[in-house]
Amino acid sequence: MLRARYRISTVNCVTHAQVSVNPLNHRIGNHTDWASNFPFLELGLPDNYQLPVAALEIFGFGYDQDFVNATGGRLWKGLLLTEERVRQAASAEGVSVLPYRARLKEKYRKQLAELPASGESKEKAI
Image (cartoon, rainbow, N blue to C red; front, side):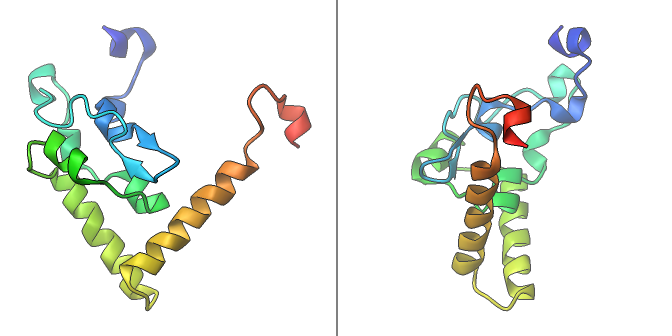
């Protein structure tokens, strides 16, 4: 119903666990509802558990054991794919994964700092 009403693309239909992040500890799955077994296919949606996790790949976020437990102990294929992409990108830059993720997290902090403050008009931010 919501997809039809707001013309939401099926690729943008994700679970809360896939997009909720904690900006303080840089972890995904700040909310773990539907961290596993969301009925994507039954609802006519592509299985977004198969897709890379943007917060990990772009900003170096991670996850903890609580998140793994919420997924039923079985990590999403997309999460594993993202981990491999991060390893490959770090290798291509000649660094290990930890410093590479630190760079990504710094990129996140810089972009976050550039956003206008809550309630600030766009004109003031320019």
